[in-house]
Amino acid sequence: MLKKRKKNPYEASASGFFICMSADKARRIIDQIRGRSYEETLMILELMPYRACYPIFKLVYSAAANASHNMGLNEASLVISKAEVNEGATMKKMKPRARGRSYVIKRQTCHISIVLEDISYEEYEEDFLRRI
Image (tube, rainbow, N blue to C red; front, side, top):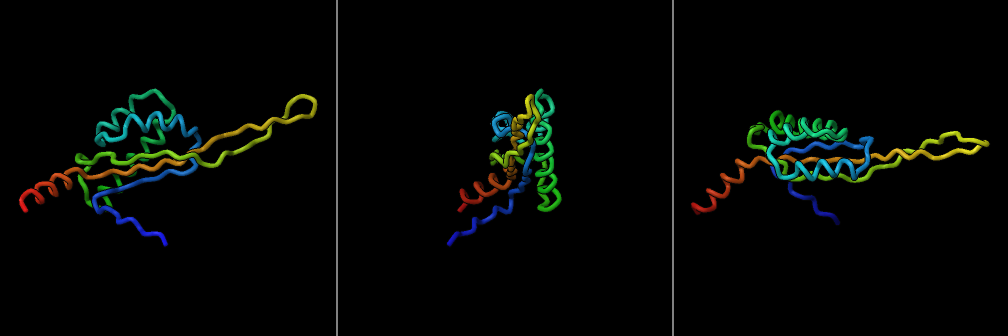
């Protein structure tokens, strides 16, 4: 029997599935933004010269919109607490070649999930525990 993980009420997430890029190329960008604040992450993603930045930028922006709209969290106090990239299905196409042969073209996809956490909640909780 699997136990459900308790969801932190001060976390917001966004996921993107079957994004057409290699998981290694997406991990290169995710490693740069993990643990940074929301505003700093947006600046980094806008200035990086990689094609993988745009879908990750959209996911971070979507997670922040989820945090502010659904949970009422302040965007200035959000931090990327968890960001992961997993490999998705590989799309295969056949390309005709000489002498009636065909080669397989493989198009890799990936699944990206980003979790934003409100750090003002952690500071409030630490102060509360010190007072007890």
